[in-house]
Image (cartoon, rainbow, N blue to C red; front, side, top):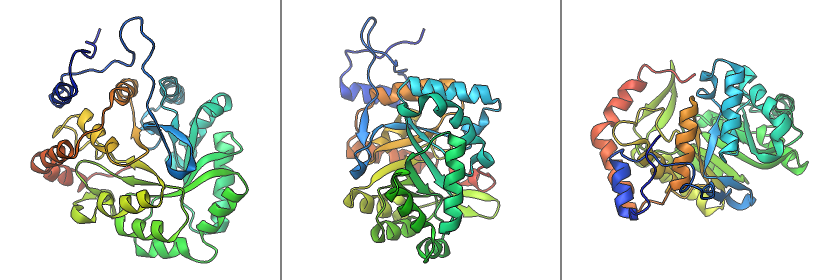
Length: 331
């Protein structure tokens, strides 16, 4: 049986112990005590209450090769309070949404359900929304995102007359979706500009202690140094100023930041930013258990603590992470 969190540690001792990788935080409180609740935040101006971590249903969810095992994982996450479910129309050519739909058939009212569409025209978007609803076995979505903003040409396509924005506003007006947003791995400046100019309720962006962004280059998604061009520096302040809900992703840098600092520190770094939640890929049941426990034990880091984590990554792992992504394909 794993050691439980020693309750006599003060906050400073806990942070130091976590940094050393010595704590396995329990999902439940002391023996015979009530379970520690999953912390929740509000998704910006939407008023939607969300857990501080979400169940990411992209490539990591598709690592469950057996559908029943994938569904078991999602059911377990919901049981543990990870009730924000993040998927996309294109994940696994629809397999992700279909798997989630099998769970939504009985548990739709227990989750905040989010999907993303790759469409860039209103006509395409309407068709994709209809198909996603069918796969997900629901008649409404809580969050609908434009998926994966890329370069400047993509910004122009999204803003064009008859573009995808038209269909998103229509879906929100018709109560098919509660909140509309946009995601990006690779274009912090473009995301900043779109958030400034349009009426989004929320947004999802790459935020991690390495402050790397994912570039869509030949051969797949690559990590590139961000510096002052990161989402944290450019797009996040705009979203905060306009009251949008923010979903952090790529918190672990596609696992390439793990090792410079601990999983605990990487998650704490992201959750200490002004975000609503972090969406995490969890390809094993033990990851679900661990992340639920860490979320329950989360305490915000100070700015010096976050800077220390960032500096550790900068010195130890950043170059190795970038080298890994030179040949990595995110599928």
